Length: 596
Image (cartoon, rainbow, N blue to C red):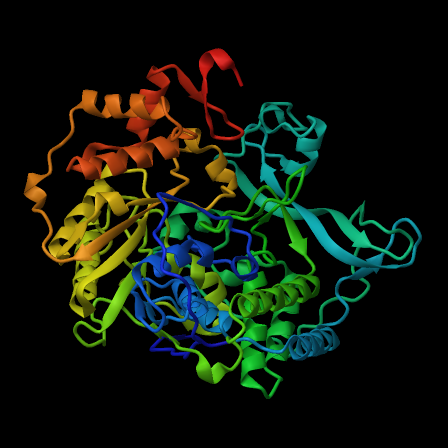
């Protein structure tokens, strides 16, 4: 399968209306609506979180711009509320997802086409997920297999199958020992020498529930003749190569993240998806296909209690991981796509005819917008959060199968190593952000508003936002700053206070016009910061350290503080000094006297 660079994609979308309302100071939504769940994308903002801003700052028929569109949620929310939208992003995957969210197809046709693709893939690769039931001896369908990393003991060099060693100590990682020399074993820094299947989870007619049993060979070995799959190199220049130690673990290409069986099944399914003559059906099937790739890979983590899903911000392969049935995953994701389509139709029944859709997605940089001066009514955008996420690295996993790659040199991120050499430096990030915001100011109508979603644990990045918005000619309205709580924190986010991860966002709304000089911004005194924190924990805004931190930033904007020195760590230290601690399970603040 060959790859190429992206040029431009465009898709039109639909029209609707809604009452004009004010945005509440806190917008709380769950990341669980059918549209959100249909396809994963990093830092995606639910459409239900965007709608209040569109109602407040636009009217039906207005043109909305998102220069960092990602998976196109601004466009979907605009379509639902009857606004037009034009979306820009360098992300090939983002364009693929966004255009297919609004590619509404008839459910029966999609189910039929999906089943035909599954049948064709099985015919080509074989019934690779059929195995023998250990209970009755009959044929069973594999739901998933459990695999374990095998490590070399640093002390005696003998192999340690991690799953077995973990089971011997009642699943307590801190207690794991080498079964040969009995020395304490820590995974960090240990050499991975192999992978072994340790269990199968199967469905069999002899029982109503899934059964975990010893691993068994499939009744049919994968037939790979004539199949091809992408094997794109994840080079040393990629941030994820360094962050996930891919070279050390032998995972330096996209194909290496799939088991032999799943790689073959995916290749057969990808080929079968090209069969329908209806281009809309092919595109929607491919939407479901790219949505399962992370789960179908070795990145789907096992846990004793429940699956932990794939880490979506890195290429981490856990010491115990799943190999899922690709065809089962695909069938379920097709149903998720159907639920998403129905959700959007219910929110706006007029979104039916593709010819009526009025959203365009342009896969290109937004440093220079091909839009006329003063032609846009409102901007809503969610730019990259500095060094938090490397989108082109993570999207490569899906884009390899799409055959088109995002150009990482255009990405607006900050290298975590600090060795950006100007290419991925903080200075470049600020320069690009400023350019994009200047373009937004150019195309916005006089007095128009821009709402910017941002989150970071470092004050230095918040200071970048202050400077970039000023240079672009925007004035942040402190009274229009909204806290966005998307709920359902990630596994890492649950330990917010320990991991130093901010789990909430701020939405900064600003008007085009004269902005106050950044020279007037003053660094706050430590006691002033502490006083604000004390006042907040005495009120209702102090549910978690993230709430306190973002409320402090809001207050800093109101008082014209230079935010560069206000880090998340500063807030957590202040809270600990005030007699609070952070519950490791919920990430909520509790008084030490209250206990956990």
